[in-house]
Amino acid sequence: MRHTLFLLLIITYFSASAQINEGIKPIIDTLCSPYFSGRGYVDKGCEKAADFLTTHFNELGFDYKNIYTQEYSFNVNTFPQKMQVVINDSQRLEAGIAYLVDAASAGGHYRRLKTQRLALGSVQSKEQLLQLFKQLNTNHFAYIIDSLDLLAKLLHTNRDLILMRLPKGIFIIPVPKKLTWGVANWHNKACVLYMLESYIPDDFSSIDIDIDQRYIKHSNQKNILALIPGKSDSMLIFSAHYDHLGKMGSTSYFPGASDNASGTAMLLMLAQYYKEKKDNRYTMVFIAFSGEEAGLLGSHYFIEHPLINLNKIKFLTNIDIAGDATNGITVVNGTVFNNQFDLLKIINSQSNLVPEIRSRGKAAISDHFYFSEKNIPSFFIYTNGGKGYYHDIYDQANELSLNNIDNLYNLLIHFYSNL
Ligand SMILES: [Zn+2]
Image 1 (spheres, rainbow, N blue to C red):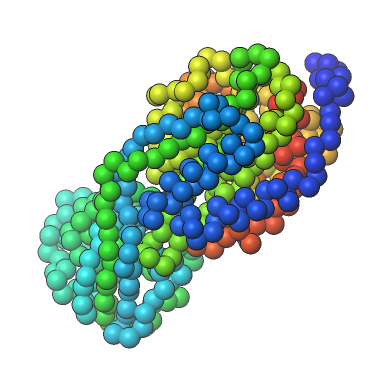
Image 2: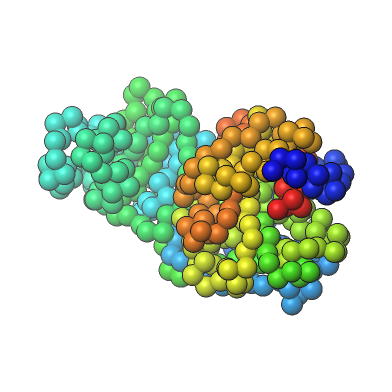
């Protein structure tokens, strides 16, 4: 088996450009620029990114008849304008740096609420917790909630379910180290702030809040698919999600360089490669999904309403977080599709590409998931490296090293040419 593989590799080995980063970088820079507003739901960020992708595929030589736009919609909670938090009458906190508003949070306008710690130590049941919530005086107090996760664990529930039960009012959850944001397709009664402990003064006594929130029903979104017909109608697919978290207030946005402008740029570079190659044995398909950060909603819609014959998919590789492969890559589904994983490893060691390939089992953490649930052979590949910026305002284009990204690109092409 290995011997046969080796022969195949010699036949199909070729030298893809090592200058790939020069193509990837400007795409990442563009997608992370303020114009795209973090590719979310404020200022039409996602919509602009979809237009950019369609145009880019067309510029690569894809005929419009081979570029498909799939429209669908979902509900999403947004913070389009005012986002102002002032503590102790005078100290204005910066959105994204000192605090985040919970993705499912309500907005609100509150003046000089006194702060009070919410004593949850005695709560032993969900009923007691709900009773406690009923007694709160949210017209006068902003409540600081410590150890929310501990409480959730004790009550065998999760943080989101507790936040859903909070009454209208202001709640502050201190966070020791890192703020991490998300997208919610529901909205709560309470306005919940995650505040970095380093920004909470010992004499924290009052808070003023001005937060505009808007719940958008049926926000229209698009999956973009581009296709190159091959000698066979059997398909090899690359996918990447192009949406991110968007804006939190009018000034803070989440560029999502690593997650997932990097994977989107890789998708476009691969599309360029196969478009220029012309004589593709398989039909090559490139899918840019939206709605991933809102809960894999784009790929879920796609699998329920496929634009292609799912039975013809020979393999799908989803790329999400591909900005720094200093420590190699991880392959989700590596332990599920063993033969393909072995092939990937052999190619990598023979061509000396990325330093390490780790393997994981199945995981519902990106857009490969619904494909592999339908037994379609598929990997989700992410890179290991970088500074750990994730779902925060620091995930910026200039923070990506792009180490070994050219090697990842070569690895993916070699892998597909040997399938
Ligand atoms: Zn992602």
